[in-house]
Image (cartoon, rainbow, N blue to C red; front, side):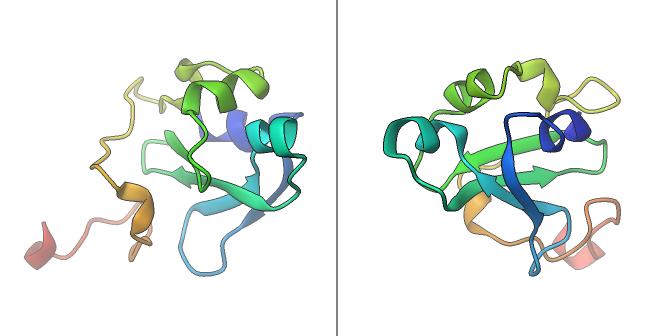
Length: 108
């Protein structure tokens, strides 16, 4: 669930995005280990069922990020046990609406 990821003890400098609802940025633990990088490059997105998705802006593999946070892929699942339904390149587009609200009918 989303709370497991955002509250992970090894996640540093996690802040809410000012531009999009339910988007958070944090320091990527994989980048920290390899590059000593202290920038917020990890995008964490929350969905309506409390599931989450991760994307490092330097393209660190998701499984490496989860391993460094001592988490598993099960922690990405929501309350209903489902993973988020992601389209390719989902991280390139900022969210226009809150994850809990349906999109307008013209965009569905």
